[in-house]
Length: 219
Image 1 (cartoon, rainbow, N blue to C red):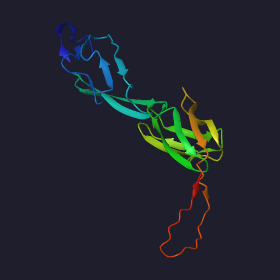
Image 2 (image 1 turned 180 degrees about the horizontal axis):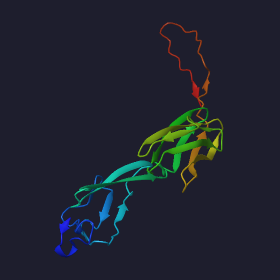
Image 3 (image 1 turned 180 degrees about the vertical axis):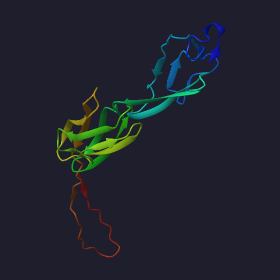
């Protein structure tokens, strides 16, 4: 406390609280306090503004301490704990919104991997992954993805029938912006070629030194 002669005998401390000689600071970069220094006259008060920047935070609890050093002989260091609860939100991002399996022979199958990334600030919970047509099937029905993490699912297309086939893969999650996300699935199934040989075998009776030509038909 700064001693002031005019205050002697009139005030409890006989002076004024001087926080200009010390810097107010926090133990965390996300927490700032203003003003960081100043003087509080006897009998007066001042307001401090605590600012919390949770821009880069994931969901969860955060704790910090704002520290002030003063000339108060009984409270040279003042520590104010700050606790915050960050309520984040997940964000589902796909590696692509269309899977084209191309042209397949009827009776064959093909697999393609789809990437799913959580770019949000809370855990992404996928409750359901389903296809609108049975010829396309995902290898997983549900997923949980941490913040910043990527996981993959494998989609299998089975060309059980001929023709151009299209379907939709639907992903239901707790993403508040896109609770239902869709992926277009495409495939063209064609019949494979069939080679016919006629005749399928040859049985010949030949004399020594004899040459013979016999046609084999391929179609």
